Amino acid sequence: MKIENRTFVVSGGASGLGEATVRMLHANGGFVSILDMNAELGNKIANELSPRVVFFKCDVTDTDSIAQAVKGTMEWVGKTGKELGGCVPAAGVGFPGKIIDSRSGEPIPISSVDLVLKINLRGTIDLMRQVSAHLIKVTPTAPDGERGVFVMVASSAAYDGQPGQMAYSASKGAVVAMTLPIARDLARYGIRVVTIAPSLFKSAMTAYLSEKALKSLERVMEWPVRPGNPDEFARTVKDSIENVMLNGTVIRLDGAMRMPSKM
Ligand SMILES: NC(=O)c1ccc[n+]([C@@H]2O[C@H](COP(=O)([O-])OP(=O)(O)OC[C@H]3O[C@@H](n4cnc5c(N)ncnc54)[C@H](O)[C@@H]3O)[C@@H](O)[C@H]2O)c1
Image (cartoon, rainbow, N blue to C red; front, top):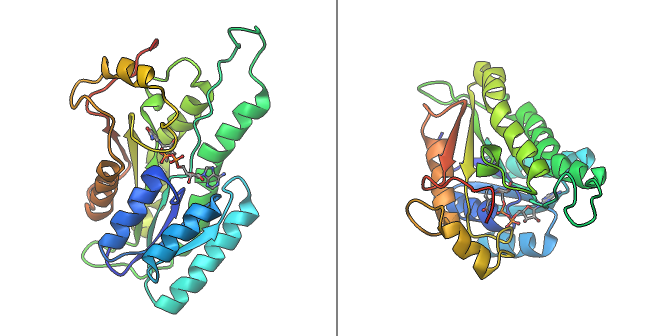
């Protein structure tokens, strides 16, 4: 799939890995619709990269909110004439919580588990199903009849989740698990599904980590011994979009790092 003159929907595009993806798509001649809860950051990026980037305030836990944003995106596509090319559902949260709180001995509030699953898993599925309904109608491109591509975002926590990552790991493990079945569902339409599983990358999500925690994580990094940069994530999104043979697979983007149990 070519990026130039195609439209991509990026949830979570107002910050971190999503923002780097928006900037990469824009730099390669693509059109981008950012869907994010953070209107301040979203509008700022859209203003900076206008007219090829627009922003829709959207909460991916709310199916109507997604519907409105997808409708707005399709109206914009109608005006620009730049057909939909894919979607990167990158909106996510990493709220920690052990199944039993070590201090109080109380079980984790189920509302906290629900929220992580609702944003990271249900929100991803809901956005993808709503975008798919439009993507199956775009003009197939030669030589393979490709219509589009989804690039989902999992995490190292899908494989080696740390203490306190139960809900997060569950959500990201599910993203890994659904990569192949969605690719199989959409294969008949010429739509691919690729998932990237990053380890520790610099973003707002990881900015809270103390210097001590970062140093401790360096012990388990193989090489390079540093967190990933968002543009290194975006580069893999670019490859995932452009290389038609990548389908139904998960790419670990982690410099061989394996997350330890204890920091
Ligand atoms: N940074 C890392 O180390 C890392 C590692 C592995 C996976 N990931 C995944 O990458 C993705 C992006 O994370 P990031 O590190 O860039 O974090 P980030 O906090 O910088 O960005 C996440 C974005 O998602 C948006 N968002 C959160 N909840 C939302 C909702 N309900 N509706 C719409 N938007 C919502 C936020 O407003 C924010 O703009 C997430 O799925 C995360 O789990 C990040």
